[in-house]
Image 1 (cartoon, rainbow, N blue to C red):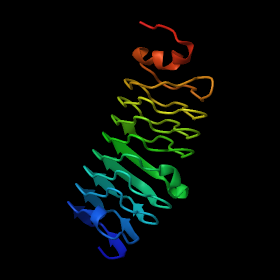
Image 2: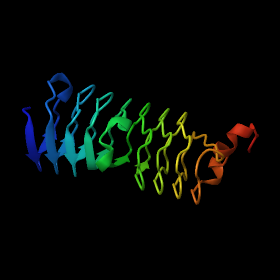
Image 3: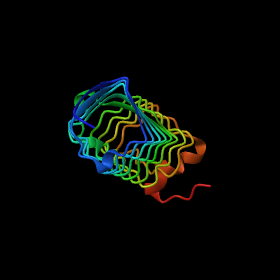
Length: 190
């Protein structure tokens, strides 16, 4: 693929990980079943794009723009979203695997992470105000100085959140998830 501007294009079944990755700008594009494993997406711009059933594991995203980008059913292991262009970072995820990913200091207000696997994800100092984390798997996820105001954790599992070091005003939890808020006290909740 050559460098350039793409509008309303559909890329299906393309292996970007085996090609030289020039910078490009994509507007209104769809990526379906594409492979971007370890691809260097640094400086690329994605505006109003959709990724479906793609593998972006360990993609390099330094200064990459993700503006109004939706990911559905994607595998995205080890991505450092803390290095993207933070000025216009608006994303949504549904049923994705985001294990070992970093959202350090990212603003993710009202982001959807519904039904996603978020094992060992770093949310340190992130703003997840109003985020949808329903049915998410959060085993080992790191929440420290994280804004979780009105965040929806109902039916989420595996989380361990210390209310003393996170902002949880009006956050929503299922009764079964309350143990994840009390773990530091080593209580036995049945």
